[in-house]
Length: 231
Image 1 (cartoon, rainbow, N blue to C red):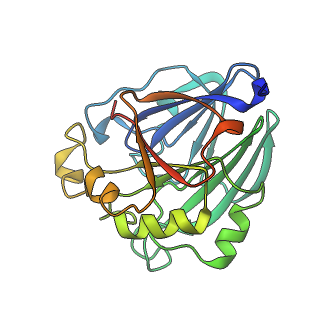
Image 2: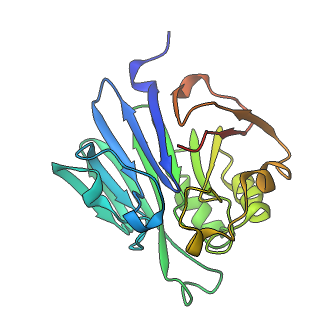
């Protein structure tokens, strides 16, 4: 029988924003909540105990839109922290292929929460170096990887396949790709999810919901892409 600390509710709120929740520990983590100008999507208010923003851009830094009055926020963390018994590591990376000269820096978050290990890559703009991969492996093989696949502002489909293979999670959940709900002035040129799934050479599981429950002790051994329904 699996441990209650291994069961998580993952919700995709749109774009790059996800929440992770374990009922026993009772802490809800939000990552990269988007601002109003991102598109026609909404966020639950006063819902987050901990908010992690990978960088300070409008579509990733709206912690005020979700945080509880006594919640904790971190923007662009580099280094290690322990908050509410959640182990965090922020790994310095970049929003582009020119070491941040075009779009700045981007923190990659490693989250050790209960029995789960999660990685969120924010707006990663390049293939990972060996040093970055080593730092991301601080808690061992990640159970779930949240990875951008839309290109233009981040890595695109082909680079995303490479990065998934570099990190080797049990599950990879694509994000930051085209949707009609996004602000078309800004995001109309993003790749679509089909552009990514067409070239992914592993298993794919599609869900008819933006919310799933996972048991980290019962995930696929071979990396599997989980496609959630856009909220």
